[in-house]
Amino acid sequence: MELALFDLDNTLLSGDSDYEWAQFLIDIGVLERERYEAQNLRYYEQYKAGTLDIHEFLDFQLAPLTRYSRAQLDAWHRDFMVRRIRPIIREKGRVLVDTHLARSALCAIVTSTNSFVTAPIAHAFGIEHLIATEPEVIDGRFSGKPAGTPCYREGKVERVEQWLSGREKNWRSFFESRYYGDSLNDIPLMERVSRPVAVDPDETLRRTAIERGWEVISLA
Image (cartoon, one colour):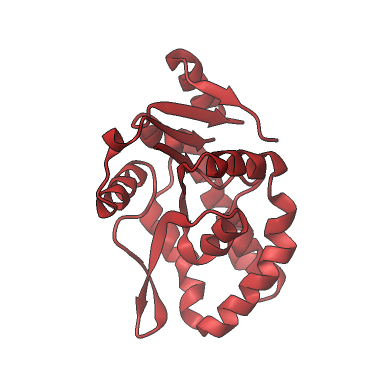
């Protein structure tokens, strides 16, 4: 069996769903623009630079989920999918996913973005399995804290291995394992698969891929 793992933001999407969600909430007036827009951009730049404090960021990103009912959040998310996500789904990304699914590969999206934001996006790609940062839920409401290890950098490796173990599998269960990623933050997981693929990579990942002989592709 083949294992195919896909990063989401700036890989299957031509943008970042975490950043877009906060901007969407700003645009519809849920978050105050003056306070949140600059902060959202600052965290995004830190992510791209590899300097993000993931726990500080999650305090910022998950806080709005605590203030509203799940019904209201889901309604906003449906609008978010139409206005912000579907326009940035890469058609070449969809074709790539479909190619692996057609080969009966075990496919999963592996993303640092929380599962509330990303579960409907994984569904739009036809991918059953999502490995993401999980928001904690207490008494049916989001607490504003992550549950377990955030799915970020080395945390992606931990979360994937936990997922595989839950399916009574490990890396050796597959004749080939791939991970498609775009960012220096994807390097820890790319080092664990048998065939890492850099997708429209940032400069750090591009340099690493060239040095190590990893495949480099574009889905743009």
